[in-house]
Image 1 (cartoon, rainbow, N blue to C red):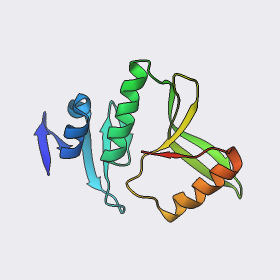
Image 2 (cartoon, rainbow, N blue to C red):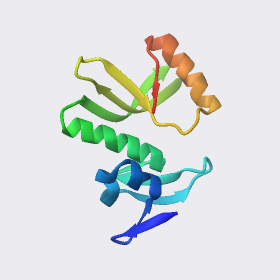
Image 3 (spheres, one colour):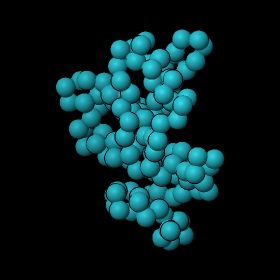
Length: 127
């Protein structure tokens, strides 16, 4: 189901969970993982869920609750692999957070999360 506002389709979940972004989120057809690509605040995301979660982080960054927000940061892993985090930021205590917005954990993600933990000594936070 979707709503029409200014000619753009909006996910019901986006409107409910993040009304501040409702005027700025548009979705496109679903991919092989059944996620609809979305756009929020001028940025494109792999799913409506990711757009909503990253939109929340953008708002926290704008309010200076979190700092140094970066999207799609790459981390080298053993075996010539790379993990690309959806977002990386610092909280008010300057603790770094590595974030991934997932509806479910794919087998590939589980392997990369394990390699990431072994290499960097930190868990990837799923939101």
